[in-house]
Image 1 (cartoon, helix red, strand yellow):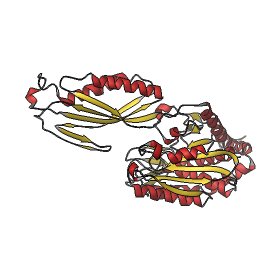
Image 2 (tube, helix red, strand yellow):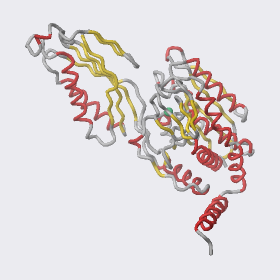
Image 3 (cartoon, rainbow, N blue to C red):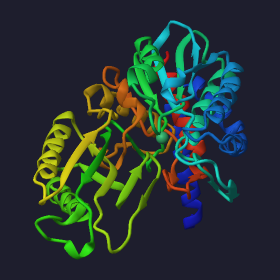
Image 4 (cartoon, protein in one colour):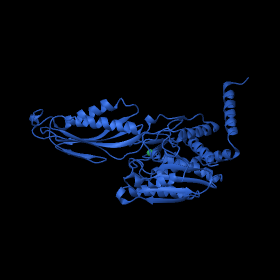
Length: 422
Ligand SMILES: [Zn+2]
């Protein structure tokens, strides 16, 4: 009679055998090479996170690009850091390419920049804390670890693979025709794109929402606060601002899949806002004449974006007495619609994951996901995102990455890239 523990270990052994059987001998060799290098993942990621590369830190972004560029050069890639014109206020991008004719031409997408400067970096067991640990240096290191195993197996010979790591994903340089030119070029020489933004459980992303920034400027009249609500003074800029924001909330909340977030507010007799902060001055006994808000808006399609913008403009134009409002939108990220080509790539990832013994991969709900660089090139290319490292607190000062998933994610990426490039 077998006890439970023996039955369980026998089942586990059979699962491994079944997984092994679904992989070709070449793929089994690649998986073994991923495992052999698994210990390097955490130190490699920690070294990358320690390079401070907030979007606005141009020298830091370049250092990050050169760091990954050296690692890719060692794998037979021709790597270069392509600087952007100073007028964009952005550093530039790492582009690394292996030229070949075998299989499909693959574009691998990462980014070098982080929302916040690095802050404190510390490792606690299987968790690495630090800005960019998950978004998206974790994904960048997954790309490099997968390519390293493929290179060691001799599986990169003859393949056409381009790695693009942008230096301004978190806040793209303007105009995007300039800041995304090298990405468009790389897409023109590729058949499909895989992007390594954070994984979310066993899902991958076949659609992403677009995102756009907006700014609302309200002007009123000022004077002694005792004149509030009078015909001469009206109700001041702050009441008008709150009326408009309440209108946005009421009219946009019902739109399926849309989110809007007023992020920064400044108001008073004087008020100014930049992209990351602002100043204001006034007194409690003076009616505020100026109020500003900056925020973002995320939509599932171009049509929904147009509908939301029309509703927002209508609310802004209703105006309380003695006030006026101006609402402007800046250039943003397009949406990535779910295409049959994206679903075909998902099916291949799902198959690779099952063959490795990790189980099924499903499509992630695009509502839970922000905008990303992949939407600039998918369409026209079929694409899949969310192949990077799982984490917590992305876009906060308390970001961390979960290192436990790294071996599975690297194996999955390596086998998928291998199958696509045969
Ligand atoms: Zn990111």
